[in-house]
Image (cartoon, rainbow, N blue to C red; front, side, top):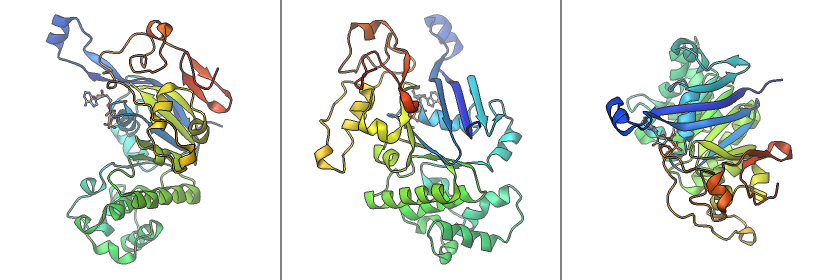
Length: 325
Ligand SMILES: Nc1ncnc2c1ncn2[C@@H]1O[C@H](COP(=O)(O)OP(=O)(O)OP(=O)(O)O)[C@@H](O)[C@H]1O
């Protein structure tokens, strides 16, 4: 049986400079913001896409939502190849793939009531339904009282706005939700509420979720598998608990070490990476992480490592993995 979403060798480019400048400097006109990523999400599974700002997470999400074209590779949803889907195809696909945007208050139209906002996807897709009853049902699903239907976005707290975002995403009974930084800007206690809500929806409705975040607590809380992105590529992919317990890639190790552990006995020594992530417009030779890697050796500067696989779908790209080959 094939996975619900399958992404194979996805490459996504942006223009680096104008034609004239490219000719004068003999530099390529485009650069790979996403440089060949592959992953699959089974029905009802949750995958976390993690990485620093600029690693290419949002670009992957935009392409999955049909807002940016893939330059190479394939995307299949429920067995259908949607790589070159038209705008009309995407209108239909948005019934099955819903997006939860990063800034919920900013993405909610200020003049619409919460009731209209949560039922808007139904109207856009021409669904015939009793909208008041639908608003009530959707608000109930996300734990908001019925009278919230009459409120406006500016009257909502950050956590309530997220719940409205989840309700909108659920309106068309999607099979996959793409959640971009679902807890950004929320207090810790509200973050936990929103994550519990997503986990509950996933468990109750069997919806698959792709979570895009740089917050490792989010990943640990709700994902089955995680993929760590660096410069538009995956450096490590595998079962979330296993990676938290025993990361293979030094970049994953550094990210995990910077994440506060709930259990102080399990706290790791913090690893501070030198410098910033290089630009994908100018990739380092050899292993692209070698310029910041505390464990880099001569080989890393010369040769790009191959992807190695452990059992259980745990893969990593490193010459000298921490977990052993
Ligand atoms: N419209 C654009 N035109 C040119 N380059 C872009 C564009 N959007 C993003 N980029 C570049 O593509 C790379 C990947 O960006 P992307 O926004 O996907 O990263 P991200 O990991 O989602 O970051 P963030 O967490 O800040 O959203 C970065 O180098 C970024 O500067």
